[in-house]
Amino acid sequence: AQPLRCYSCHEPTPVHKCQTIQTCTKNETICKTTMYSLEDVYPFMGVSTVTKMCSSICSPSDVDGIGMTRPVSCCYSDLCNTDNSGSLRVTSVPVGILASSLCATFWTRL
Image (cartoon, rainbow, N blue to C red; front, side, top):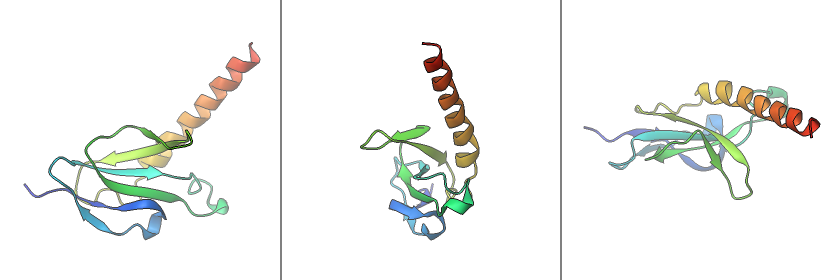
């Protein structure tokens, strides 16, 4: 079998500029995209940035060095992590809104 190929940019890059193709190693079977801003949901705020890479594991979010949680999208076919990986936006925003609503409800009852 041919190794998986993914779009790759290891530093936060505007979505439309992350065009480098990387051939993954044998144990990297996942194309992973990490979102660094949700500004694509609110286009008037600017450009969204992402990192993309081959990966051997996938979790629904990454936590960076300062404790910020970043939504992650994973897929399993050649060059599947294109700039229109919509599942990243659609699923992460409602979860974030739900979590903040629950926190607000919890704190007001104390």
